[in-house]
Length: 364
Image (tube, rainbow, N blue to C red):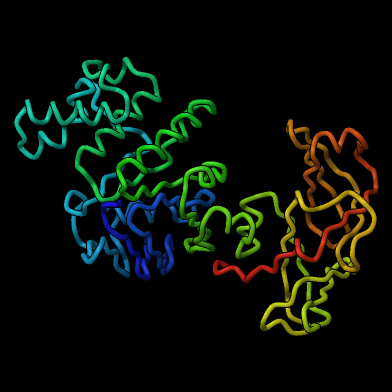
């Protein structure tokens, strides 16, 4: 049973003078959703989060929380709470008073607000440290206090600005699990800004990939990984090769296209493609075989440029005529049964079913 409300952005735009930070973004986040806004630095994800929170004004468009347009409401009246990247804890207050601070501002009496603060601290497993000062806590503990302080207002949505960026890799995984547990337990929406693909894939029900102030794709993690909408998404999520060319022939079920180096490839047919049209395809790096025997138009020969050992897999980077970058993930055992060296020429093969035609980027 979820509580809270749907959040909807309707053609939301943010300008800073002549600079366009967010460009007519429309998005619906259902109640009870863990949503990650994902993208590189400067893509507009934090600005979007701050507009939802009310910490940035909107140049154009509206934001709805349930049936209410909250675009002009101050942060405290929106029904959202924001956890800042810096945590922003008061150094002179103990943990309990930090968590209870917003209730103090509302005039709640001390015994009531202290009891509510302890309840919130129990939720994040920090009640035993209620009398410590922030300086006596680790980074992970400070983060939990900041989380409890945001949740004490009983928000319909919790907004998190890169909450794991300051944590070490092992603690990130632990806190990630805690965030997902809390979101499921509370039943409210979490909207989480990150530039980490791994973080977004592990946490979210809805991944929103942003680029140049626009949304490139909003879908489940599995959909984004298996069927990236655009070349930007395919490259940003990683583990995909993107081939660009022009259509040379259109058949009943497939199209043929040629890359600048002269190689010709086949892809499943897509509506609207005609001879001469530009086309981009994606092929997952783990679906490429280092072997002869590709179906016609489903393979090429690459020259090994770099080899990286990643434990359970080996990442092989190759160069080929007319192809900017090409990578193959090879299972560790298979690679060392037939190891490669830099400079080797390798036949690469895939099946037509592993080819995915990409849409044009809205940020282009």
